[in-house]
Image 1 (cartoon, helix red, strand yellow):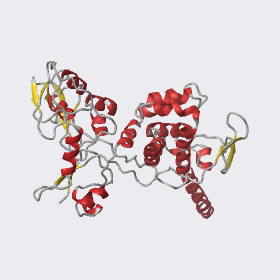
Image 2 (image 1 turned 45 degrees about the horizontal axis):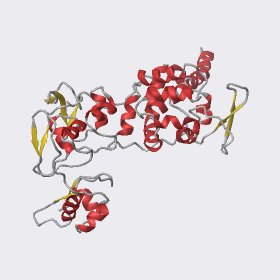
Image 3 (image 1 turned 30 degrees about the vertical axis):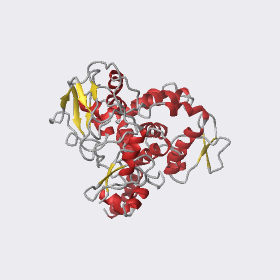
Length: 401
């Protein structure tokens, strides 16, 4: 009996440490995938913002190339994308049998370096230049483009990427990469040593958009000119709206005559379907502060047809008091606001009367120049307007007292 106890005393610690070392093996592949996503989603989003590579593509490539963080290249060399040394590499190296014996691969100090180098590798190699002409949210085109450019030899590489993205809904991270309100957590800088979690724990990632945040059936949808639309809420972005209503950002921008650089604010009307060729009423009288774009959003008419019906060139603006046609063609164009009048209006904004507290941003303005004209500091101006960054655009309305 005593011998048995002694034997158990020595065996138990061995079993304990064997159990710890086998943690990854005990995880299912899908658990490893989810752990990988949880660990590297923020650096992928950060690289999308910095270099323009879709976060979904980066994550999918990492999952496939590392077998969800389990490959020797990832665990021993922090190389998540199988990038070989090539002639221009002057960093550390790692030799590994791949397509040929003892091939040279890049060795990184940590995983973040691997993700950054992956973006730069694609961005700076002429063979991949065509990828950056693609829509950044079109992950299928990127996947097929990578294969066509020769990134991998596997003939099914594009299909593998697309499957990894769709199975794990990685496209949601592309929307976060486009969302200027989304703040990326500080990228992780640890090595790839372990994605192993305590066995039995479930992944705890939160969904990007929950039904509670945006529910297409909660009464928000209304109709203008028989076209579905909603009003933007505080904290929402076009990317989140596009994801929630299952149309994507590209379609949403097209429906609203916007671009990826268009700025929106709470209360703005957002159409969820294409606007009409004709407006909801026959005529519209232009009032102070209106533009052709705002009028097109007000009446649910596509901007290009609003210009065509009124025989105006794109970009010009009608004079206040002019009557625009929304259903029929004008015989002649309306009076237009001249550049001189627009400039005079902008100049007077620098000298508001005592009752005025709003300044309309004009082209060339900065927070510094505006704050200087109104005897404010930049921080005071940002605080007055709840601004998180320094970006402003012509047409923005800022509180100045």
